[in-house]
Length: 282
Image (tube, rainbow, N blue to C red):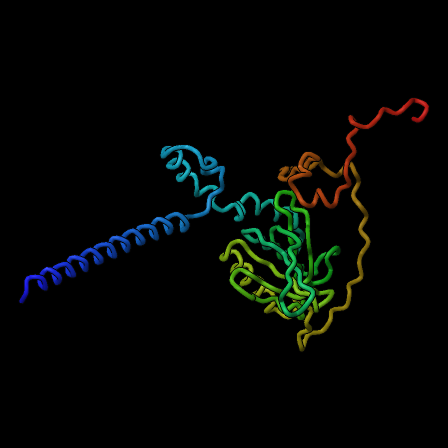
């Protein structure tokens, strides 16, 4: 064999080895980049306040990672916040269920479940009135959205036999309005477990026909009992409030924080900036 052919063959083998080395090196670099991106974006989301606003060295990063569990998800309610909402809506002969997370309330004007419009964000609450009190003499299931912090009612409706409350997606529930069954209401929960707990509670309540305004066969309506007049107690017999605990406080300075204060309260005029009135005008 001529020597020239041997040199040409040897050059091809060297080129193949170089190409194989470059390919393996590029694959290793791409795999390393994928691992770096995965480690960056698969970690829990944190606010800028927990990461120091993107500044600081390794010490600040290590200290912020230890505090990330406390500020990763603020959509879940604490036990104190749930007790606060429960105290605002608790009543005699009324069962209450407070969701453990926030939810967004959407409204749709068609049955096609498209064109959702965000209306409110608050804490979902389910009330079961047994109808055994004078103020709540009708047995019904009420669902409402309470504002976080003030516990004011942002939205309220009744669940009946035509509400069709169901799970339409992961952490997304839908129902029809009791006043207009062509309009849909959507609740998007921030926590999947909280949405599941609320669905199980509503499913357990709606399983009873009496709770959704359905008559049970074989039952007779009870005749209303004649009320016996009872004289009111004297003021001297009424004691001062006892075991009182103040759990909710709202001030004028909280107007910028809460949606209810911005929409329900009138705008207060700044007295200091207003011109002074004359004594004759007063």
